[in-house]
Image 1 (cartoon, one colour):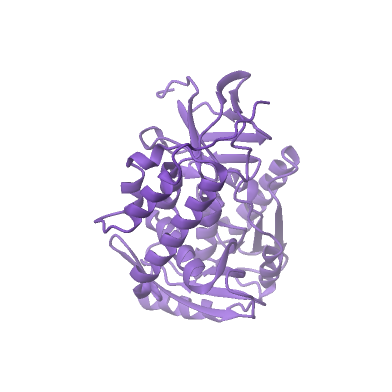
Image 2 (cartoon, rainbow, N blue to C red):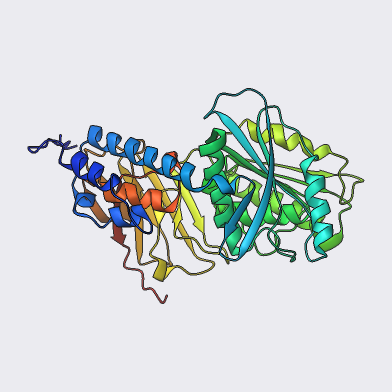
Amino acid sequence: MTSIKRTRITKNVPFDDLHKHLSQQYEGDFYSFLENTDVATIPLTKSECDYCVDTLWENYINTAKKERKQENLLINYQDASMPIWFKTFGEKPFGEKSLFISLHGGGNTEPYINDSQWENQKNLYTIEEGVYLVPRAPGNTWDLWHRPEIDHMFDRIIENMVIFEGVNPNKVYLTGYSAGGDGVYKLVPRTADRWAAANMNAGHPNDASPLGLRNTPFTIHVGADDFAYNRNKVGQEWAEKLAELHNEDPNGYIHWAEIYDDMGHWMMGKEKAALDWMAQYTRNPTPDRVVWWQDAVTRDRFFWLELPKDQIREYTKVTATRDGQNFDIQTKDYKNVTILLNDTMVDMDSPIKITMEGEVLFEGIVPRTIGAISRSLKRHGDPYLIFTGEVTVCTEIQENQ
């Protein structure tokens, strides 16, 4: 395999330009500006790239500390507001703490009832270490926790907990009870690249699919006598689906399901065992296989895959695998797929190959660039999901298929 060592004749060109841009004031999003500058396309050596990643991540943190102090107990997105409450347990060092986000029940009812459910959730569980965070749903509708704005608000919560409270972004967990369990069923498969593991208690999945859970351990707890909305029945069905998926893909779809005999909607606290079960897992942000199923709420980036916004449709699928420098894509739904890269995944000084159904779609070296780094930070403030190179391939699938 050919390996190319990059050298630079004009020293410090990307660094000088980068620091020049960082020293100036901009209106709007800095990373959107930076990805369109001349410096954005300059190929970087690994050491240059590491320096740029560190510099831009430090800038991201410092900017957030200045702009987000008011978000300590309230998250706003568009017209929605989400109050939050949190408590820290244990003595883990800054940067090593876990985060457990716990979703209350309630739903389409009077606000004071959902408020009481929020208060109850604050004291429902304790953890050995980390931050236990309970948000108050921004609305009072049946779909408390799986409306489109929730995805963005949880992204913001996680970022803020990483920056201000010292949470490790690879140790973030989601749990929910009743309507909160509904949210876990719906949210986690479509945002699986955020969570180390998740726990659904006494909820209903509606039209959710478990396909996206390939890399996210998932535990289900429901009473055998929880007949309302067929929670008991669909809990068992999901357990069987996850078992089938795991049998087909033994390295994925880790799960644990408990259907408690002689228990209804309230499980007498037995579901608390799920917290310790989740805590044993750490997120892998760059897994070797990604299964991406678009829910009714769609996304344009998932782990190390990206799709053109104008091609994204509900209930479509892309699967991609990585073996060393080789990638393989499977899809019947998308004409273009982007592979996102960094040096933790591949040797970026050597060629990669991307195939689909035996046909080579791309073979070559993908440069590290400030533009790719900027696009990562523009989407998510997650140091483990910063990608430094990207390549878009054409699958030759017809868009209207």
